[in-house]
Length: 184
Image (tube, rainbow, N blue to C red):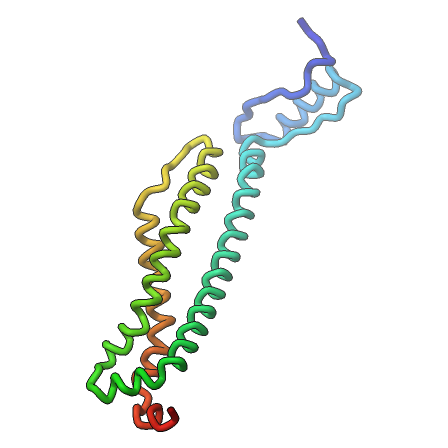
């Protein structure tokens, strides 16, 4: 049954050679069947690419905002460690006088911050898993979120924190204990 009012889209497979000539022939046939409708076409590969452009934009925005969040987090952690170093100036001076090593002073600063990072990871990991799982369900070919990505993320978090903390901790550990004890 031929019903022109119920005919909107057709798909045609075209050989790679002579696309322009074939498109002109299809335009001629379409215009003969539906003179009131304009012949509009798009290629399937372009249509599929357009569907993924939104995902590419989302990925770019995610990279930008996650980098910004890491930078802000590092600055906050750096400020917090600097504040802790100022608050513990006398304690660090006494520990150094009593024979504490550079590693002991760095460990003093690092252990409380690593505990905070571990707690933050335990809160954020389930939220990240649920969010990623729900987002990945929208794709035709699905992948699962594995444990490896979480191990990498906690390792990267500890590494970034260690670099951020170590600068202030080394600075506090290398300061002259006589000056810090004299000012108190």
